[in-house]
Image 1: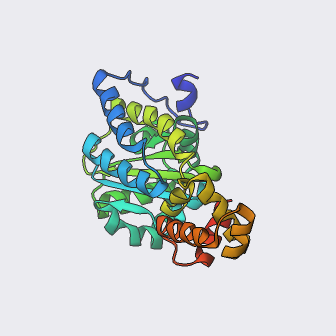
Image 2: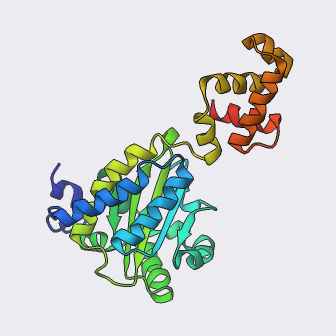
Length: 268
């Protein structure tokens, strides 16, 4: 697929984006640095923390956020996103006034996010005039209130068909140039391969890391069996079952058999 195919948005006044920049050795180094930090994350919470920290250290992006939702549209309403830098202070006003007008919820941005994984304010402005509501979001909220001249988003695919949007902002209009955006697009493909398999919570990750025998015990606990019944089913002494259950509760952070059962049913 060519750059013109990705960049042209139908409509009067649409303009083509400049040709996509070729990646330089330093761009690959940046991509590998981020991937190295994120690829071994055991759960989505661990991944998003590593990603925001690595974007800050590798690209100099200090104002970043990680929103997630069951659908693309619902990500903008995430009530518990991870935020760093000024996005922490921006969040209340964003939820109160601006989430429905987010630049990256516009059709042009959505198309770019689906086809290339990354969308930026500079690219969208190069294509065509922004919708009035999105333009107000940019001028009044991002720029006038918070001084953000650079804005970009990366779309990641999560387990179960859910979606994440990583917001990246900076006071410098030149923070994300053609090379940086090309690097982020390379990262998007690689990072989505990671996030599509990650458990959504640290408890789910702990559950997935149990031994086969421990998982058998968990399944029977979720079915409502007592320790004696589990022992009979698995040919184990009841005291051994008690030890298994105790260790599993410690590993998963669950406070009771009921909590463990609910976790197991949600993970099934």
